[in-house]
Every structure is written in C-alpha cells, then in structure tokens.
Amino acid sequence: MHIRLAVSLLALIFCLWPTQLSRRAGAAGTGDWFFVVVETHVHPKSVKADSDDPEERRWYVSNAVALPANIPDYSSKKKAGEYFDTNVVEPAKTHGILVDYYDDEMQINGGSVLAVGTREQAEQMRNKDLADRKEQGGNIYSFELVFGPAKGEDTSKPKLIYRDKKQPSYSDAKASQPSDR
Image (cartoon, rainbow, N blue to C red):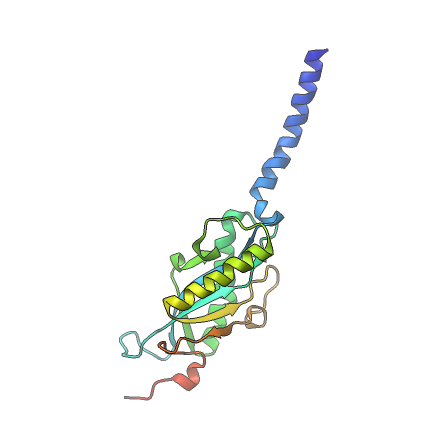
C-alpha cells in the first residue's frame, strides 16, 4: 500500500515538474518588469568621421514594460536591441541622423541585476536612473518599447526629455548640417 502511494506521489511530482520548469524559463513574462537604457553616439549623416564636429552623447530610456511570457528573460536584451535598431536607429537615418551604439552600451534596468516584480518598482528605478544620467552628461530621450507589431517612430515615439546645454543636439540634422568649409 505504501509503495503504491509513494509511486503515485512520485508520478504526480514528475507530471508537474515540467510545468514548473517552463514557468521558471518564462518567469519574466509572469510579472517581471524592466526598462532599457542605451548610451548612443549621434552625429549627422553628412558629417565625416574625421570631422571637427563633435558627436552628441545621447541616452535613450524606454518606458517600463512587462516581458511577455513567450519571450525568455535571457533574450530580453536581444529583443530590446532588435526593437531599438528597427524602431529608433533606422528611422533616425531618414532624418539624416546616425545613432551608433555598442552592445555593452545597452542595459536592462540601467545595469541593475535586480528582478523587478511590479510596474511601480520599475518606474521608481527608471526615475532614479534618469536622475543619475542627467549628472553624467548627455541629452536624454525617452522611447516606447512595445512588444508586438511595431511601425518605427510611430510606435517608439522618441522624445527629448532632458537637454544638456554642454552637448550638441542633432535632433534635426537637416537644420544642424555644418556649412561647407
């Protein structure tokens, strides 16, 4: 009798175990919130690399968003990078602006390793991160991170939220193009 009970319990555990593993792999989709910070180097398309015109240091900070259950948390940075390239970097080129960054200049939660369980916590971390970025110098832009169908700037809506007067601003490269020397 005890053997049957033990075997039944063991069978039940093995049946439920894959469910628990799949929950852990997609845990970010069940309540983990995050935001993305990207340090970029911006210059007009028409400026040559050896030009004396300075590049603009620009931070892009996303909204706080929950990672969908169908995206494993270990790929959130990759997904955010693909989204950023498609919906921020590429549209900027149509305005005559080159937005460059390296992979290590994109951070989840501003580089924090803390898991964020609520939107309020993520917003608090984001606001603190924004205050810290203002002290580091550079112009700060927000952008909307949306999972699902995206249509460039219409979805990401990049917007200047802090202007550092010590930095050049290439927000409208056509108006900022250097004159011929």
